[in-house]
Length: 134
Image 1 (cartoon, rainbow, N blue to C red):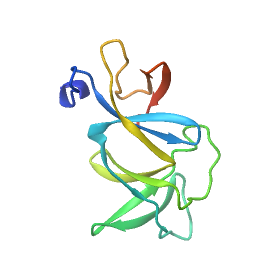
Image 2 (image 1 turned 120 degrees about the vertical axis):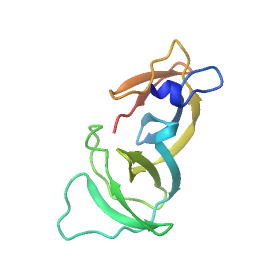
Image 3 (image 1 turned 90 degrees about the vertical axis):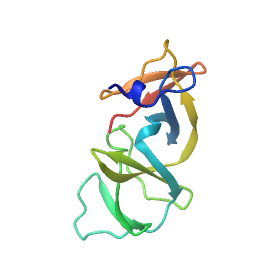
């Protein structure tokens, strides 16, 4: 079963959550997103290993926080109070990525490319949105 079959939008397309990291507008399949929460202070280990930034406790679970900035070719930066933690499922595990802003849920249609295992591009109102494959 494809992602499109698992998560069809109203017109049969795939639903994607858009968000920003710096000036990049990105998207993930809505089925991969658990929730978004305000950033908090992280617990860390003495020796950090990229992309692991630390972890925090959420609803009784210890959730790791990772940075995808390096994967996107962006310089690393400190987490700020205005940042948002996006909890996503990767390989049946929940991890958190640090983002700056949540956009909206969009539905790709037949003329758009769909998110899959590869990095794909989705056309959103004449803008380019990068669909992440984590």
